[in-house]
Image (cartoon, rainbow, N blue to C red; front, side, top):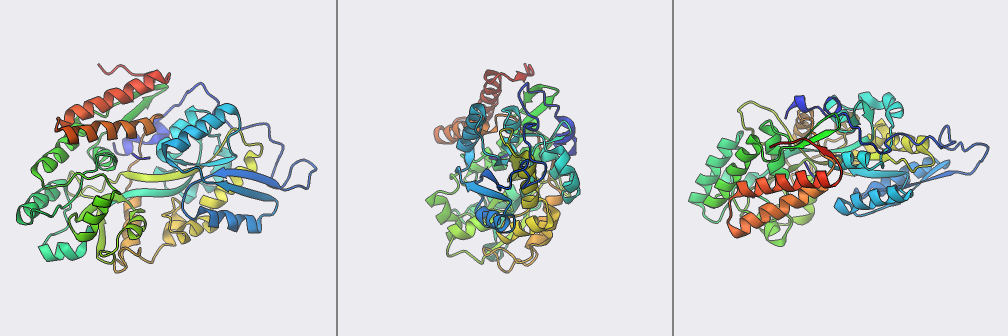
Length: 437
């Protein structure tokens, strides 16, 4: 799922020599969508995607492209879908197209699932910022069409900030000071929450501080979760949780939803997509939320990490890679497609789609500047290096930190354990891993 500055640019940093098939399928005979030699039969493309309402965009394509029809299957998303895609590719029966979170794209490339669409993508490259293009580019080769983005923002209870006289914190120092003071004055209220099952805050704050959980040099990977930056972020949150200033509930649970709705928790750090999800969860507090930039380590910085987002890949098993690429580009990169994504409540990766967003989310209908801020935040999002075992890392995080919080053991031990587990998992999977002793 889920999670250095410009120096970590993915396109220039990664030279992937995985030793597995990761190039375009060269067996297709279709030159353009609808052309299969002398056959007049339409092409049928299969696609796996779980994005909400994406079926509406597939229907829009199918209604105007009778020569290329797309059949959509929802595989459910998450780590299970990654495993399904890798297994299907190994068996030679992966779908023509698939949704892949950016964090899992390296797995799709190394597992021989994603094909090279560099040539087809070239015409649409300027529809995206450089940082977004880097998310799908490995060693100057493009393996996916960016669909949506999850730049991280802070969402807060504007009504209760006003009631308690709280200024929106611009730095993490200000956030900690405010959290301690608020909790001292109102013991049942917490400025924020640390999720022991979701690594978003830990990962994005580490990125802001200049760290990266993964790096790659040629074909050699390294894992640096237990970095100086990672330890700084971990200790920051441990201190706040230990003092009681911050709660530590798993997000999305009934208790967390209740606390968000009744004003026991006043903020959440998440992707730009979060208001849409929260509006469906919350009841009493809808209309009382507002958005702000995520606090920074250094005053004046504008570093923004990712929380989610995905691309559409064309698989190496597709018999019609050109037709599949044309659909993927229409869906995500064309002005028509990107605007259509905005219409189904996505935050499009293509700038044309972002510009089409103006009406604030239902969670915060009076936050009229929401999408102006979201566009600014998106433009400041950091390039990120994700490793080929991100799904394992998310699980390792939940195991290590969940146990530390439950047992009251030092969080830095959990961070070191996670680093060790993720490194060993890469080694067991056959990747070349740098010696970090």
